[in-house]
Amino acid sequence: MALPVQTQVKFWSITIAVLAFALWYLGDVIMPFILGGAIAYFLDPVADRLEAAGLSRVAATVIISFFAILCFVIAFLMVVPTLVSQAIALADAAPALLKQLEVFLTENIPSLMDESSTLRQSLASLGQAIKERGGELVGTIVSSAMGVINVVVLLIVTPVVAFYLLLDWDRMVAKIDGLLPLDHRPAVRQIASDIDRTLASFIRGQGTVCLVLGTYYAVALMVIGLQFGMVVGFIAGLITFIPYVGAIVGGTLAIGLGLFQFWGDWWQLGAVAGIFVLGQFFEGNILTPKLVGSSVGLHPVWLLLALSVFGSLFGFVGMLVAVPVAASMGVVARFFIGKYQDGLLYKGLSTQEAGDESDAE
Image (cartoon, rainbow, N blue to C red; front, side, top):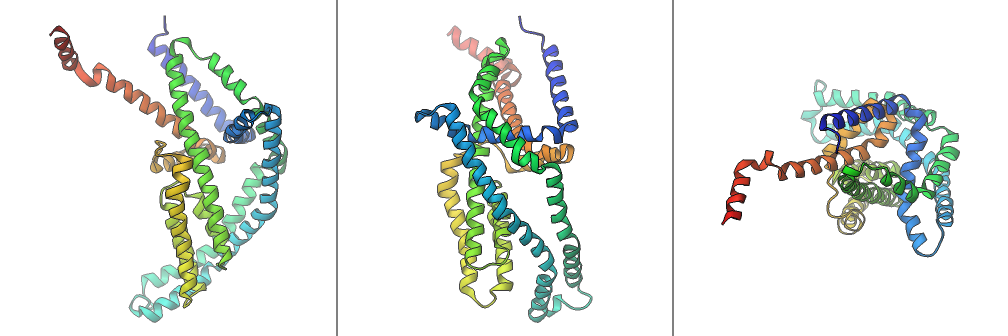
C-alpha cells in the first residue's frame, strides 16, 4: 500500500528544502563536485562510445581525462589572458569610441547633438561610467572567480572528482535506479528519462554549439583584424543558447566596433556582417539540427528566469545548477499536466458518461 499523498508531499517538500539549504550554505564547498559532475555527465557518451569500440571503462576514462586536461591547460594559458586583457581594453576604450560616435552624430545630425541635447549628455555620462566601472567590473569578476574557484580546485579537485564520477557513472546510475520507490518506479524512470533527454539535448548539444560558434566568431573576427574580436566572439558564443540573440548582440557589437575601425572600408565591414550571417546559417542548418535536435522544451525566458533567481539566491553555484533544475522542473510540470489532462478533473464526468454510453451500445 502506497503512502498517503499528504505524507509523500511532506516528505518531498522536506527533501527539497534540505537540498536548497545545503546548496545555499555549502555552495562554495560543493562547487567542485557540481563542476565535476557536470563534466562527467557531459563526457559520459564519449566514454560509452569508447567502451563500445572495445576499450575498458578505465582506459576510456583515462584517455578522455588526458585530452580534457590538455585542452583546459592550453585554453587557460593561451586564451584566458588574452580574453581578460581585451575585455579590460574594451572597457577603457569605450569613452573614446563614444566620443567618435558623438562627433559623427554632430557632423551628420546636428539637431540631435546641440549642447542641451539629452543624447549628447547621455553619451558623455555613459562613456565616463564605462571607463570608471568597466575595468573594475572585469577585475572584480576575475578576482571573485579566482577566489571561489581557486587554483587547487581548478587543477586538482574538479578533475579528480570528474575522473571518478566518469569512471563510476554507469554503476551510480544503476545503484540509484535500484533505490527508486517500487510503487513509483515506472513514473520516476519516465521522468528521469525525459530529464536526461532534455539535458543531453540542451547542455551537451547547445553547449557544444555555443563553444563552436564562439570559437568561430572569435577566430574569424581576429583574422579580419577587428579589435576586441575575441571578446565579441566570446560574448556572441556565450549567449547563443538564446535563439538569434547571440548573433544579434554579437553582430551589433562587432559592426559597431567595425564602423569606428573600418569606416570607409566597406569590404571589411561587409566581411564582419558576413561572418555572422554565415554563422547563423551554419548554426540553423547544421549545428543545431545535428547536436540539439528539433526541440528540447526549454524556453529562453524560462532559462533566463532560472539563471536570475538561482544566481541571486545561491550565487555562482546557483547559476551552475539553474539550467538542470529548470529543465527538470519543466519535465515534471509537463508530466503532471499530462496526468491532469488524462484525469476526471480535466475531462469531467460528462466524458466518462459518454464513454459508458458508447460501451453500452
